[in-house]
Length: 474
Image (cartoon, rainbow, N blue to C red; front, side, top):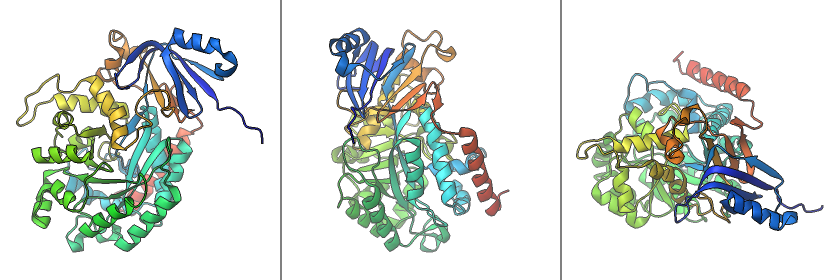
């Protein structure tokens, strides 16, 4: 078979290219050259044109995209999600429930999931994320009823073309053992560990620019045992670049649970189980102590801030500014679509920016607490660092060919061209105009390529209604 050179794609003459490189350069009137799955060149549009003209036989692009009127960014990185929860949006959140009450109401509904529900909910959630600028998504699936497997969402994500970090979640401590979930949705720990190993050995790819990396994710201190936490950490660390993920310090109820059951605050408990290190990232971390921040920074453990979910469930305001000032690795996540009810990654960056500016006990309101550019950095480079990726998160030669473009010449940004980068967050967040993942155009002219959204929504709503009906909620 003849070998063909990788396709070259030129993103040409964008209003601004936000590199997120070490100097945080923002290049006006700039272009980016992609070759296959790699960024090969970027700079001022005139310089790139001259570079191509100097050797057109080797450098002429196969395709050129006119990016005038756009801001180009590294693809956004979503570090924490429960894609299956698109099936149960707006149930309980509109009436106002805290985390524990909300979970108890929804566990019986989620127990009705089947493989089709997992597959279609994954694609619905990813469709929204892709259209909001996400190119890399970490997901936490921790219920496996009725024959569901992590394989179901992996297949769905591969069909969507996203760079995917699925985590094999788990719950093993049911109500009868003092946990929060009903016994019918927990698994035996031996089966969890065996399937975790199977998933790693079947799917995990630690190579640079990998499109699929696995993590292990016991759900929370109130749904798994100490033994499962320890053994999951041991198993993950017997492989290369398999991450460890869990919810931690999300609510004061969780803190009280840990103090009563384990005699320790959440992060101290995690530390006692060998759950600190650069391979660990925690979702939420709303209620850390000052000592906790020091531990997180010292051990290079990551935190995924989920602003919208924390607001909807009234969990609190995570001290992101203090985390950043102490050197903690922080990324963003839209979290479960039933504790957010949306999957807008650019919108999540905006929420993170706004929420840090609001005062809370001990901290006065300050408009300069988190800037738009800092929030965009959390959504790009910050997320890449949380997921231990040095091949995404910035636009530089040799990095993975993941980038997105948002239009700033539209109605919503009229009058905002004095600072179009900040305008991405200070104005209402828009739909991505172009998304390239691994060198492949996934969104073009604001539309997902090759996806029948109307049919997908019909299948998804049918699966959702079936679950609600079987659970007796409709």
